[in-house]
Image (cartoon, rainbow, N blue to C red):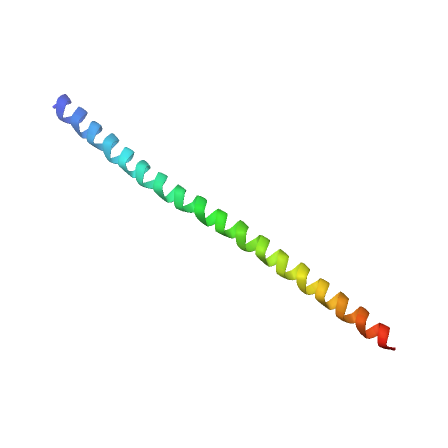
Length: 66
């Protein structure tokens, strides 16, 4: 009986370790998602700053005509 319990415990540990290896691969994909999120956040900031700059230049050109 004790040997069967040990084998069951070893099998449980192996199964838990295999789940951990699967989680590591999902962590890698999470890392790429974080990278993409940072990239899109920076891209969004560049677009917003560019739009504000465009509006400032456009408004300054309108004021010169008056």
